Image (cartoon, rainbow, N blue to C red; front, side, top):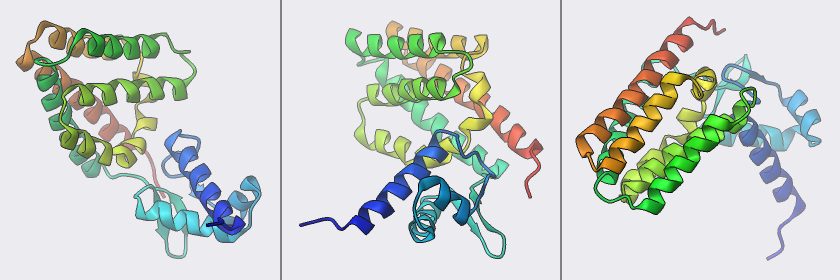
Length: 218
């Protein structure tokens, strides 16, 4: 079946806008003007409007009557709830990984951390990508596909928080937290792996929630 060009234009507009949000080019709270986005993307306003509606359904965009659209801003309470679930998921995955992760899996985790720690200090996109890879590998190492799916169901919400923690990815504290998780998994210590993973997520939760609360949103 031939795909009509309008469908391709709509899909391209949606994918490009979504990527800009996920990569932090369009940050939480950023106003999304249909005319400006249409001009920037080289399309008419109709595919932009449809893309914004799809992104609103996915929780990445807010459509505000009379005030237009903006990249969604999570409330401090929403941040706490998302990170609490993430802590449970990663804690369980780390504990499970401590009893089943082989040398190849450990090497993948360590390689992801090496990439994160050696990324250009000014390249936040590269740091975020490396951090995402580490955490995705950590959850996958737990060997529970349902747990992994639930983790990825949080992707949209987490994407909206990463701009508030992007300067934390290479701090000594974060490096130590990441390495503690891997060390516990390598040692086969499920309790320590769970505790290290949960402590890391909780530390980020506190910072992100505070920064969002301090920001002035209109």
